[in-house]
Length: 231
Image 1 (cartoon, helix red, strand yellow):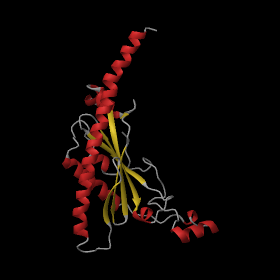
Image 2 (image 1 turned 90 degrees about the vertical axis):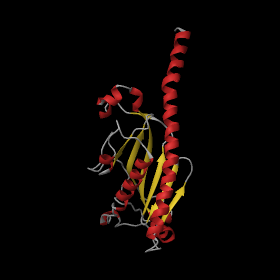
Image 3 (image 1 turned 60 degrees about the horizontal axis):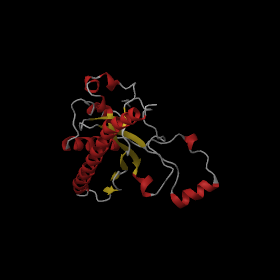
Image 4 (image 1 turned 180 degrees about the horizontal axis):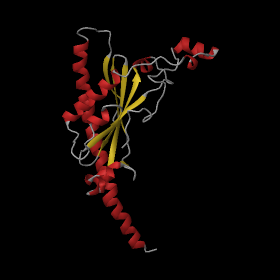
């Protein structure tokens, strides 16, 4: 093995790929910080409007640190999470067929922001076994271009990876779109057989913690619904 040659190759990988991935991550952190600012502003404005006619409805924002934020709108809680890793699209991704990535492979490295939808009562009553839904996953590259993989209209609204930049206006569009989706996503009555049996321990736990397992669809998996899309 040629030590100097291998060392030079390692250096080149660090100079190109590692630096690019770090650039993507730092940009993702910056945009997530801006997203949290816009989330807080959105909730402040929404709370003033909602509480003018019904003060019982919770409209709140919580900053949970550098990589997380949470909003609650009436019966729904949305968790926004910035992943600490940078990802490359798999070879099977249709994005590699576009001129945008063919012209520059580095554009395929993305940071991700994930949005999970939980019932507000799951958080309020500390029901740890309750399930939530991953409703959107935002991909952001070093050009500040983005697209969204998500439920129903979310993938259709934000699908122009080649041209769409994650500006403040688009952040606000993203916030209102995921909010609208979550509050239109209703809790279904679970199948009778699912809850027909209850142990004495579970009954006592239910009494103490209001902890029957609950979720909007009693499932927590992205991409199983017909309306989901893949990158």
